[in-house]
Image (cartoon, rainbow, N blue to C red; front, side):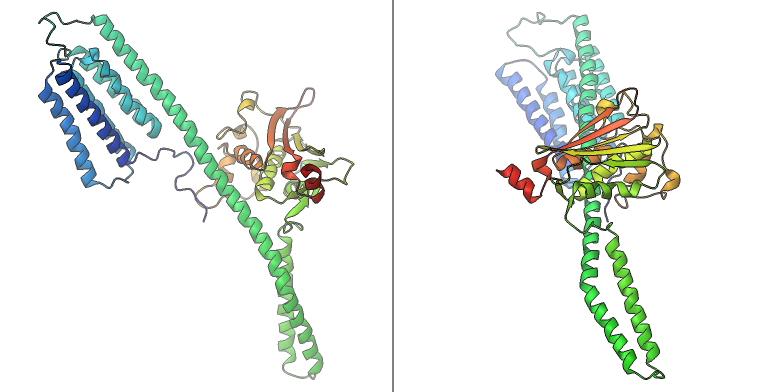
Length: 463
């Protein structure tokens, strides 16, 4: 059963507890080392006992978390938010003891927000950002003196102007907002791409599964045809050898009838792949006809044009990914066309190209540069042949209704087609037809040596 563990759109799977524990141990080690260096090596005066107590509290929390929970446990959004909020509060306590915003380590407020932006939901990240900015404001207003050397005369410690401290807080707040949004956007694009590629793999697995079933059907028809023919011949001979009034005549007639029924079923199985589907190599003209055939009965004229020279026609491996990719492009063209779709194939010694054009509204200008990216769609703006296809059709299996999702504007169809075709060595371009014509044009180009598996092709390019 093909499915995704998480449905499309649910992209925030939480942080592993072990990750946060390791990061906190790193923070504890850094804080301890900094306190020791400042107090004993640089001889700066600071409340060493209170500072070490705050760090020890984090160490105790880490030990408790490690003992009570398995490290592989994945935290929920709320659980991870509480732990990161504690880290912000712990840092605020240390900064309160060591000079507040005048302490150069105040910018460590960014760390928990950055972690949240890469792995947690936007709502959680915003809340943690607000908490960090609020804690920075509090320690900016109320704090113990900045630690300084004992050699500096009492009362002569440098005092930063209030406007400078306010500027530090503004810089910190802006950094939290900017870096948080930037990190979230980069992580979100990575999550979207990963999820879309998972959907692509599921579609390809399904297509390969169906292709394998075609081959099994053909093999079954071939292997079982001969014994069924033998049973039929033997049954005929038995009928001839028996007297007309024999009680076994009816039984043998039933046997012949069931054997013929089995042969009919096998012929049906053989035809499921569209005639030539069981073959693993086909000329480009047959590939295109295999792709176009399911879309010919929707009231849209589909014209396939091939060059006059047929002698050097490329022979292509019948790849499920390639068939699905071309089929998706043709399906989109039929969906958006007003009345006609043209498919033009052309080839030279160096290149094979297939161009699909329609007479529909064309690609939206604001989306044309983003076509092929995951979750980019204009499906909601146009009609869909809902009355011509069964409702709830699933392309990928239970758990991922990709077909239904694409119709509602999920934006994975072209991405999946583009990814599968590029795996075969193709380059795709998406354009609108030049005026006065209207409609969209999708061109797919392969280097011929990457797609042509004919003996002539190999000889020509291998020389």
